[in-house]
Every structure is written in C-alpha cells, then in structure tokens.
Amino acid sequence: MKAKIALILTILLILSGCGKGGESEVENTITVKSPAFENMDYIPIKYTGFGEDVSIPLQWGNLPDRTKSVAIVMDDPDAPIGTFTHWIIFNIPPDAHGLSEGVPKKGTLENGAKQGTNDFGRIGYNGPMPPPGKAHRYRIKVYALDTMLSLNSGIRIKEFYRAIKGHVIGEGLLTGLYKR
Image 1 (spheres, rainbow, N blue to C red):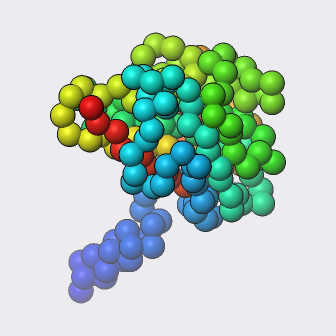
Image 2: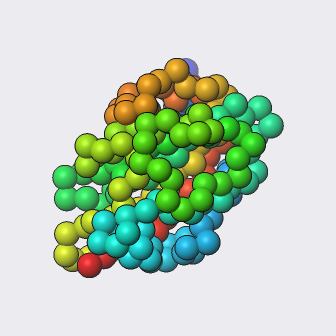
C-alpha cells in the first residue's frame, strides 16, 4: 500500500511540474514574431551568412509585469556538431518591444543591452550558414527575466544559461528555417 501511495505522489509531482529539479515556473508565454518571416517559414537570405548577415527584426509582447530585462538566444539545433549558437543578447530594457534589423555587432549597445560570443567566435549576430542538405531550424528564444544580468559582454552560451537559471519568468519562441 505504501509503495502505491509513493508511486501516486511521484506521478502527481511530475505532472504538476514540482519535480523539475528547481527550475522556475514560467508565468506566461511571450508572443514573438518578425516582419521578415512567419513562424516555421524560411528566413530570407538577407539575414544569413550567405546574404548581408544582418540580425533579424523582432517584435515581442505579453511580458510579465515584473520583467526587469529581456534576453534572446538564437540557435540551430540541427547543426552537425550539435546545437550551434548564432546570437546571445541580454539586458534588453523591459520597455523595448522588439529589435530593429541590423543590431550592431558590438559588446554593449546604446540601450545598455549586451551581446555574447556566438559559436562562430564573434560578438553579436551571425546568421544561418548550414551545410548543403535538409533545412535547419533556427530557434529564436526570447526570455523575460526577473533581474538584470551581472555579466560582461562576450560571454558564451553555457555561462549565459547558468546566469538565467531561476530568473526566467516568461518565454517565447519563433522558429525560422533555412537550407541551401
């Protein structure tokens, strides 16, 4: 009987999300879109390493009231070497509702936002450059954080994810496709 009760309690914890190892619960889903393409549509060549390689214009909404900063990661989970990071930008002011295309490729921006080092080894955005073959997915993840991050520009993705752990209060996703 005790074993059945323990099993039922374990199942209830898993289903309720309380057994996630300390991850914070996200209050809501942020809406994310781009005037350049629709979700699950192809990213125009302009925003790729084969074009002008300028950052994608983004718009978001539905941030939680207690948002202190916004962060964005763009990655390619289909890269042959594993998930490949194309962009890390954080400490975007919470009153910003998007980013214009062509964010400068520098560590600290005029609005105080900072950019990390992508897996090309560069600061800022570098767009899709997949090998020939099937389409890759490019995930643009927008995070609402309950803090400003005390990180320097140029940080790498692992350090970024360690810093946001326990501070994500909302998130959203826009996925674009690209192949050559």
